[in-house]
Length: 188
Ligand code: HEM
Ligand code: HEM
Image (cartoon, rainbow, N blue to C red; front, side):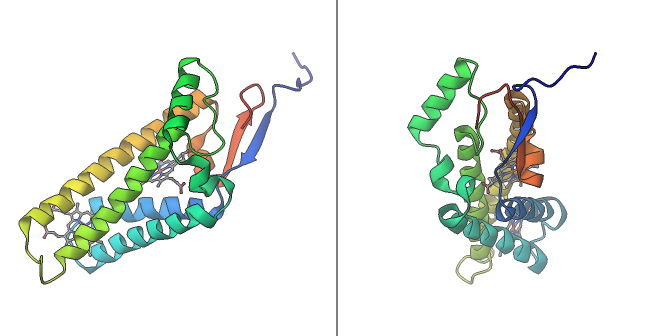
């Protein structure tokens, strides 16, 4: 049976991620996946990919101060007050939708970015005369890499799950930049 769409049941899109954020995200993912699963030999290509990932994170940190609205740290930095409000809303079964990053997701993103930087540093140190051949440093590098890839897996699963909970496609939004949201939910 046909009916006119009611004012509150059609979908609308919110432009959330600018081009920089999207290119940053999928470029870092590519560098990390290649470095961990394909070229994990520590040779120049591995180093180059790792430095590229670290440089992208460096640029993202700058963008976090000058970029578009939802790209800014001020928009999503996971302060205790924001985390508490998020958990309260989740417990009450409402308000899960965030136009930008939700505070728990934001915590994970900061951890992922810190790990990429730590890999750049531990990788670089292995190439210096002072630390060349140090086994403990190689072990740290490997452990940090495994932690990064494990947390990234969790992060990807959480993005899929939270998207369902929020009634939107978060992964699609990281590709197109637009979060599609049905009008009956909380407004961004
Ligand atoms: C996203 C960043 C990076 C990831 C995920 C990553 C991951 C890895 C992994 C999984 C290994 C193999 C560990 C093993 O099996 O022993 C490795 C080795 C190595 N990485 Fe990285 N790495 C990154 C960045 C870098 C950077 C920036 C450099 C240096 C400039 C670097 C230098 C090395 C070296 C020299 C080794 C060989 C260590 C050995 O001889 O066992 N890595 N890396
Ligand atoms: C090595 C792997 C990964 C790393 C290091 C990583 C890192 C990040 C970072 C740093 C952000 C914040 C983006 C920003 O504000 O600039 C982010 C967001 C996001 N990532 Fe990833 N990511 C990885 C893999 C993935 C994968 C495989 C998926 C998809 C299945 C994914 C989906 C997303 C989504 C949907 C967001 C936005 C979440 C939201 O709407 O709040 N990520 N990721």
